[in-house]
Image (cartoon, rainbow, N blue to C red; front, side, top):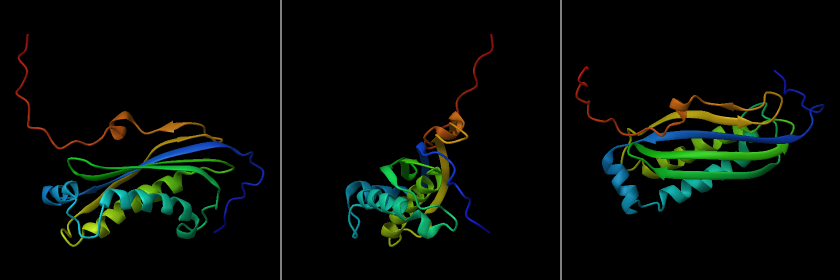
Length: 164
């Protein structure tokens, strides 16, 4: 194993956006919404944890370059399925920030899990995924629109359409 040498690459602006979802029961979502969690504000703690995790990514992921981050933006919200965390990470450097964005989103949801495990042990961390990356040699990449869409609670089946 070896860390890739990025020394000859020019520094460029790079951005990555990642998302993670923590699914949970309605009772647990209601507890978060009402602010009835003993440990405190779940969404605020998850936002802070995401920012901190992005900054510590090279300490967690072997062979990940330590880079100077320009910005980390965390959006953590309650959805019909649970907690959704979206991390946007920016830098001007020689390597991308995909790992920092993925680590931030996952850690935000893990923090929510830690704060809520007293109330529900069956929560599921799912859909940790890169939504977009910009900059560098490979340019821009975006996940397919279906993956980018926010997942909603399942709808009731529709009646068949009449044929003409």
